[in-house]
Amino acid sequence: MDIEAKNYEIAYLLPSSIPEEEVLTHAGKISSLIEEMRGAIKRVEEPKKRRLSYQVKNQQNAYFGWTTFRMIPEFLVNLNKKIRNSSDILRYLIVEEEEIPVSIRPLRTIPRESRAPLTQAPAAEHAPEEEKLDLEALDKKLEEILGK
Image (cartoon, rainbow, N blue to C red):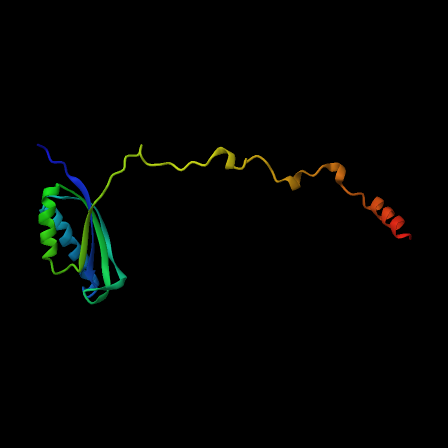
């Protein structure tokens, strides 16, 4: 029976009390825990300092980072235990990445009737030439009407 590895993502908060120079070291500890549990790192997003919407363990600011990885689901339980016992992490969440096949992704189409033709110019530009005004003839008509 072959157990297939799945894609996961872990998002985590590190305390803002950690010096900025050491943030990558703490993020590296998470990556090393994943590799220790026979996981394969796909992508690591460097933690950035953020203001939190609400306090987490009496902290208003924290470093937020995330990592995507592949792992056999059985080893995920042990990874959770090790991360939970880590004093470096304020909060974390591990979720399974869902892969959507390209053929299933919906494409948004615009009905043909609602699309404006690209070759047609606005009607104001196509005024017939016979409607051009002759200013001298217009002046004569105005004089006749006004009685001058």
